[in-house]
Amino acid sequence: MSRRAPAASPEQLSLFDVPPTAAAADADASPAHAPDLRACPPAAGAGRPLTPPTAPQPPVVAPAPGRRGVHTAPLVHRHPRADREIVLGDCRVGYLLRRSRRRSIGFLVGPEGLAVSAPRWVGVGEIETALRGKADWILRKLGEQQERQRRVEAARVEWGDGASLPFLGETVILVLDPRVAGAVLNTDAQSLPGVPRLTLHIGLPQTAEPAQIRDVVQSWLQRQARRIFEERCAHFAPRLGVRVARLRLSSAQTRWGSATAGGVIHLNWRLVHFGLPVIDYVVAHELAHLREMNHSPAFWEVVRSVIPDLDDRKALLRDPVLPVFG
Ligand SMILES: [Zn+2]
Image 1 (spheres, rainbow, N blue to C red):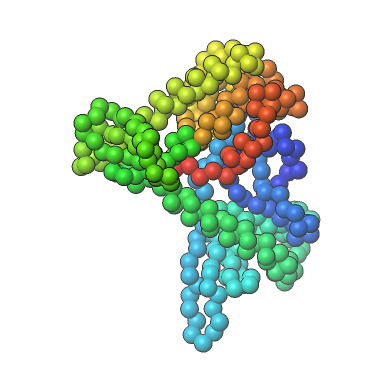
Image 2: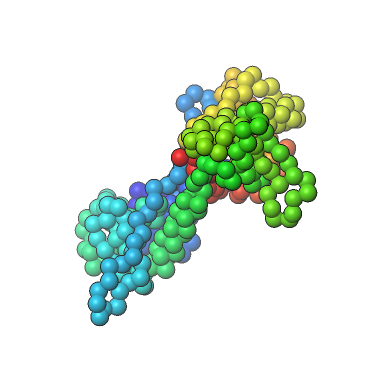
């Protein structure tokens, strides 16, 4: 199938695959299914991007239509462009069937649902047999997609007093407070365990429009991002023996950061939602490109010299759901 995961070596793996959790399998493949990871592609010019996730399209999940007196499947997973349907376990699965030149039947479970590709000469009966043979895997992946979609929905920020969002890996609660100018972060050192200790006071009245609140918070986050990134670049650059000519904030949808041979570093301001260990990893990754403009073992050696536990930090970025600003 066309989306089959490449056997990427660890150093080629993107930190952030897009779509984040699409999974592919072959009907005739072993039970070990690699997720559909996208290799970190070379940027235009000399840049080497890290790619962030984009919000996936919601899968269409609806209750099965009831049929009186007949056992009905409780769940429907329907690909929006589904042209066939099959019952797997207790689930009705609408899937998109594509005919391809490949020699075997392949499955892809992405944010939209299940897509199947099969050679033209393979009959529907054979395809359905293959689907039943992989039913457990397909249903598990569809369930994971549904769960991820639930997380994405939960991450939608309701811009108003009491809204929360992640900042440096902690939860910050928004407080509308017309007494302050702009936005001011308060830390409650006495907060109870489990209760967020950070509040961001926004200089707006309770009657403020959601978009106004969002704009104030977003520009505050971007200012914090710049301050933190500058500080972390200043920390790592001498340790890596490199010089940053310029640091730019980016809001790219498809990358966390990039570096050019001329020493210009772009870092995505949305990194500011993550804890410092993750930010440090991305900063060190981009700065290391000023020495090795590739993802060779030598490059990872350079990153590891300042981030020995880089694998753990990478893992934290594997499938993040960022707050949806809407
Ligand atoms: Zn890179």
